[in-house]
Amino acid sequence: MRVRVCIPRLAVPLLVAAILLFAGARASFVNAQQAPATMEVKIDNFSFGPAAITVPVGTTVAWTNRDDIPHTVVSDDKVFKSKVLDTDEKFSYTFTKPGTYPYFCSVHPKMTGKVIVQ
Amino acid sequence: MLNPFDPQAALLAKHAQHVVLIHFPIALFITGVAFDFVAQRTKRRGLMDAAYYNFLLAAASTVPVLVTGFLAWQFQLEGQKLKGILLLHLVSACASIVMIWMTWWVQFRGRRQGEELPNYRLAMEGMAAILIALTGHLGGFLSGVNGVG
Image (cartoon, rainbow over all chains, first blue to last red; front, top):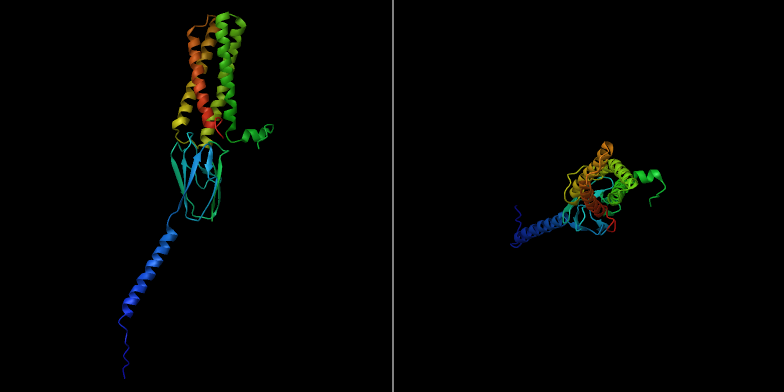
């Protein structure tokens, strides 16, 4: 004896909609996670501003020299190191590992800053 | 805080030597020019001698200044290709050093040959003083003495 299973007519469109919804939600979640956030640090008047920033892993930090004097951005442990930045020149670095990254200007070692990656 | 009476700390401070030593040739040369100009007017032998020895010491003191400036470029900037104010400072510094040594040479040659010193040396000394002032201004600008640093 054969049992006939009756699928309601609305079940198929509902299933397709659910799959699409799940896939869309997942994609937007992944995109939100991978979106490269950028933080700006301004170099002006012989100082980094803000001097200390806290960012999530994967953040790109961009330093822009707004001073009339050339500056550099060099981490204490040489993880990142810019060339000499003239006025309005920019240097970026993406932090892929958590930790604390103190840095300074090698032309003016009194100029210091810190990036805390969480 | 850097202790000025701790020689090790002072010597190992990041490229501090260049900005300290540079004051010697600047001061000696400008003093030499002042003596030479006054000596030219007064014809006093003692002032001429004072001018000559100031130029001699100014020329000699350019050597450690040149070495420490080069080391600062190599260590602090890792020998990067210079541009802008840094390049202008380097070029004007080299020209200043040549002028200081030329000034000393004109004085040395005149003294050795027992001749009266040529008058054009005064123009040369004036030009050298202006060039040194420009170099020092750029150096001060770079080092941040005019700013917060």
